[in-house]
Amino acid sequence: MSATITAFERSPDGGKGLARDMPVRWALEEVGQPYNVRLLSFKALKEPAHLALHPFGQIPTYEEGELAMFESGAIVFHIAERHAGLLPDDANARAHAIMWMFAALNTVEPPIFNLALTKVLERDEPWYEQRLRFLENNIHNRLGALSGRLGDANWLDGEFSAGDLLMVTVLRRLKGSGMLDEYPNLSAYVARGEARPAYKRAFDAQLAVFTATSTG
Ligand code: GTB
Image 1 (spheres, rainbow, N blue to C red):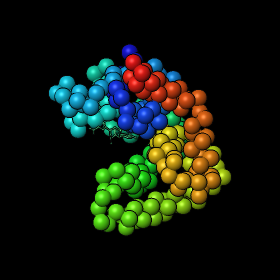
Image 2: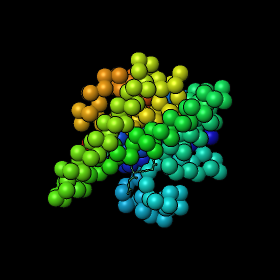
Image 3: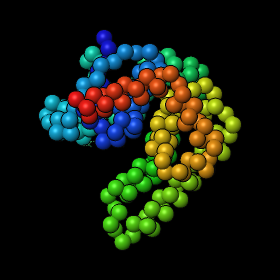
């Protein structure tokens, strides 16, 4: 039975693949699993039917038979554990791939996410510029370290893994900020992720939703 995920009926990102159904779609495409998508309005996110699946009233969710899950990272991990292609068989290499999944979400993403939030919500605060510099500095610290670790390798730890899938997803949020440009190997890493056929299928699928709901 195909899994069903939830996504925005009309994503505020304009189809740029920044909403968090994107890593779930990408993971499913990487492992060759078909899936259904249930589209939700912002209003429907906070209604009882959806809150029963997701206590915080967000997307994405993932339903597969009796199993219902939320949290994109946990969903990607579940998909990677159930199907070949996103986690190595060797126990230590697998542990490393999982470590990079957590590093992407727990160590690299927070300052990137906070910068985006600050730019939207805190622009009128007297300390806005100071906060911006602080977060940009934090991001540069992370990017510098990540860039050093990646070096001239294609992926973070051997073959492409769920760790790379989440790291590329997180770094994509910086596109347009110019911050990635200072790290050519990270820019190339993101481009390599985006060039994967599975990524392209996932991106096109979420863009098709946006296009259909914007013109329809
Ligand atoms: N930790 C959770 C996960 O990873 O699954 C976070 C889920 C989450 O933040 N979901 C957001 C949501 O449902 C959508 S993705 N928000 C509605 C709400 O909270 O009421 C976050 C997001 C939203 C918009 C853009 N954008 O426009 O670029 C990018 C990312």
